[in-house]
Length: 235
Image 1: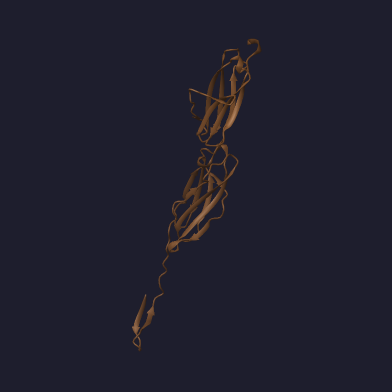
Image 2: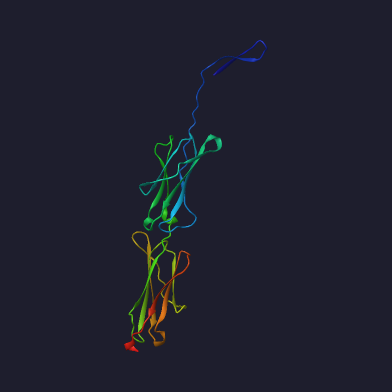
C-alpha cells in the first residue's frame, strides 16, 4: 500500500508505503499425452515415444516412464516457456518392442508441485507393433495315390495385427479357394490362421509346386510352398 501527498511543486510525492504483498501464481500441467511412431516396428526394433504436457507453473517438473509397471529410461524433460509465463514440457523414451508386447502399455508419469498425485498418460504398444507370421505348408497325404485328393494346409502363426490375406497358387497360377479363412486370436493377443486347398493327384500334376502366398499388414508377399508327389506304386 502506498500513500501520496501533495508536494511543494504540486506533484504527488510518496508519503509512506507498506512492505508489499508477494503474489504467487501456480498452474497445474495438462494431462500428459504420449505419442508414438507413424509406422509399426517389428520385434527387437527400438521405437521412440514422446510425452508432452503444458500450461504449468512453476517451471520445475518431473517425468518418469514405465512399461507396464517396470521403469523405463527416458531423456531429461525439455521445458520451454509458453504464453503468460507458463511452461510446456516434452520428454522422449526409446523402447525396444517385443513379440509379447501386444497387451503392454507405455506410461508417462508427470510430477509437479501443484499436483496432489502424479498425472499419467499411456500408449498401447500394440499400436506401434507389427509381428510378422511364421508360415508352414503341409501336404496330406504325401506321397498321394493317383486320382486321390491331397489337402494342402497353410498354417499362418503368431502374427499381429490381424490384417492378413492368403492365396494359393499351383505352379504360379492362382487356385480358386471357396472357403476364406479368418484369423483367430490367441491368449497373448497374437493371431493365427489356417487355410486349406484340395488338389486332385492327377498324373500330370506329379511334382507340381503348391504355394501359399501370405500378405500381412500391407507388407511384401511371402511365398511358402510344398510339392505334390504321387506315389510310384499307384502310377
